[in-house]
Image 1: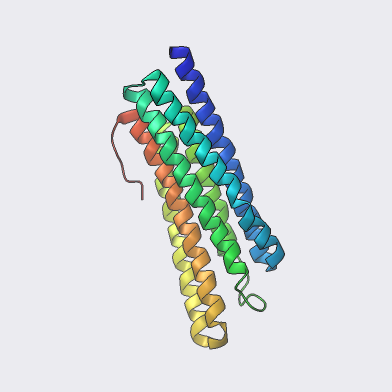
Image 2: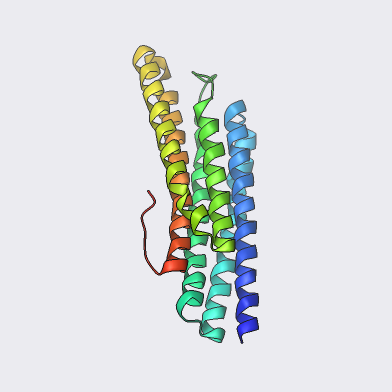
Length: 215
């Protein structure tokens, strides 16, 4: 039974890692469509969201199977329950990435400012997601706890993006709609990073049975 439980947990880890790779692929694609304002490309990525939803269902099914057949307790049970929560976080991260693609479909005209901080936010948020999944795979508390400082960096960038866009919208009212949409993008990426910290919180819960807020 122990071997079956270990095999099931390995399946969950692999599913979550594959799901994370799909989320990364989608966010990177959505960011490219934003840089080029390519609506056709944006619409392609919007349709790709279904792949992440399929992964979430697979994770849920495997968790239910393990709980029903292996009757896990203590740390094993916490790890399985956390896998379900992490898959939900990843699914929401994909939704936030898709939100960027939907913004591309609404923006008119050339970008009102060069994209510098927003792509940096996306890179940092993706690095946080990868670190959170690695922490889950290895039950690494140090990696999990380190997400808090990185989340602060993303929050700082989000605030800077908002301030810069407010200045542009104030000085150039014709850019009001686009500035508002780009502000949404910054907010989506900030929330994406928050979900990455949720993954870290799940890892801490697995190891210590305590809930800790990393935001």
